[in-house]
Length: 189
Length: 208
Image (tube, rainbow over all chains, first blue to last red):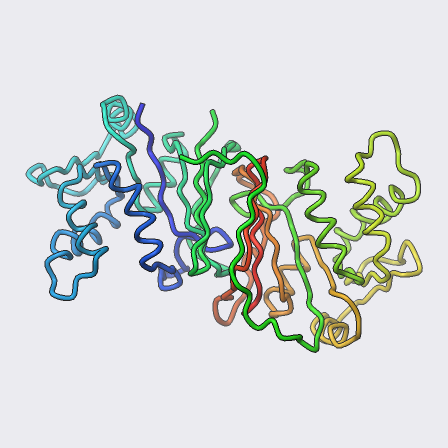
C-alpha cells in the first residue's frame, strides 16, 4: 500500500510557522534541495491543503521558465507539472485542472482508495491544517522532517490535538551543513 | 532506505573554539518529537544513560528548579552510596558522576531547605545569579527540567543544548520552551547529531 508522508520544515520547538505564518526561519540550500529532490523524483504524487496548493500553483508551473531559475527551480517545476496533485479543499472548484484531484468530502475513503492504487509515496508538502486533520484520522504513515536550528517560542505546531500516542520508527537521519537535520520516521501501528 | 543499526555520530566543525573566559551552561533533556518532556514518557536505555553520564562529567555545578532537584536528589546520591540489585551498571556510573558534582543551586521560592550541604537555594534574581556563577572558575554548569530551562533559554543564558528526541508523539504534558517570550527567535548552531539504536536522536546545539 502506498504511504502518505508528511514533509515539513520544523523549528526545534516543533513549529512549522511563526504565529503570523512566518516561514523566513526555514533554511534551504542546494544540499537540502538535492536531498529532497532525490526522494521526490521517486514518486509522482503530491498532496496539499488548499492554502499550500494555491501557493504552489502561483509559483511552480512557470518557475523553471524564468531567466534566473536555479537548478532546483527547473527540476521541481518539471516534477510539479507532471505530478498527480491531490488537494484537500471544501471550497476549490477545478474539475478541469490537469493532473489534479480535489477532495472535498469523504477524505479518508478517497485517500485510502488512492493509497490502494499502484504508485510511489504520496508526499504531503507543508499544509499544516490538512496535516492536522490527516493525523487525527490516522492517515499519515510517515514523517520526513527538516529540523531547523532555531527556537521560535510560539507558532503553528506540527502536532496539534493529538488524542493518542503515535509510536514512530526512525528510518534515517541526515545532517546538513546549513545546520538542519532531516529525520525520517515511519508510523508504527 | 537506510535502517539505523547502531550509534552513528555526525559532527559539523565548531566555530569560535578559542577559549571562552566564561564557563558554559549546558542543558540536556529527553523530549518526545512533539516537545513534551515529562520523564514518565521515557525509559532511558543504556546508551542514553551513558550519553547523559558523559555530558555530566564536564560539569561541576547543577542548576535546577525545585521539581527537577527533588526528582534527582536524594535519588541519585542514594544510588551512588547504596546501589540496589535493580540498578544497572550504567545507572550506578551515572549516580557516581552525578554525586561527584560539587555544587547544586536550586532556584525556588517554595523549597524550605536543601537535602545536603552542597545545595544552595536561590529565591530571586535568576539572571544575575547565573551570570555571576558563569564567571566563577570551574567546569561547566548543567541544567535539566523544563520550567527553569525554558526561563533560562528565554534570557539567553543557555550556551549549549542537548535535545534527545525520542521517536514518539505523546500529545500532552509539560512542553519545552512553551510560550517563551523571545524578542527575536533564538538562532542556534548545530554541532553534532547522534543516532541511537532505539531511534532516539541526540541533537547538540550551541547558542550563536
